[in-house]
Length: 245
Image (cartoon, rainbow, N blue to C red; front, side, top):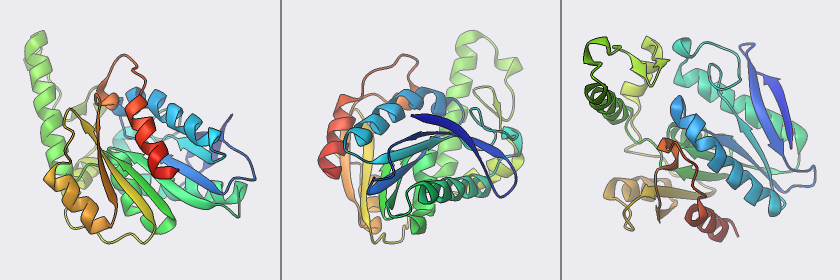
């Protein structure tokens, strides 16, 4: 494992963790969720990276500018800037292992961004992608209000805040327009993973997967990006191993 920083076109420094060797046939660039979801998902992403390492595949987990240990201002972030971060990470992967194919593995918003950057990859693994940014914002607002009512802090509720992360106008506008209901077909190997209590794939997830030309799978387990306590994602790891085997 190697922790390091690498630059973006805009001059920001992104923090990344590399696992693998120059002999790998595939390098996976991990596109994490954002804000508090990134923190909760980090351990599970590490578990997936270790699974891939045991298969002889390399991985690069990084944090977008303005998040984690990367430089930049979260309030000034945009989806385009984060897409540029993914391209910078892919460039690092290609530099380190020139002859390897590239896979993009994303979670939540990271899965949505991985789909949008699919032309830079040979394989896609999209875990619970956000298909509608507007719906995501509505869900986050409802959660925030419920939490504020439980704590009696309704009057102090910030207007544009995601669990303590200031939501800038550009990112907010980007999320409102994010809509993946009509995906373009992906020519490589792809899987879309639904996480939750149901063993059947939801119709909207199936429709997205069909349009993408991807395999759709439902994994019954808690939403690991929302958990305070770590739970080993055995069911998810087994599903990914079977698909990638």
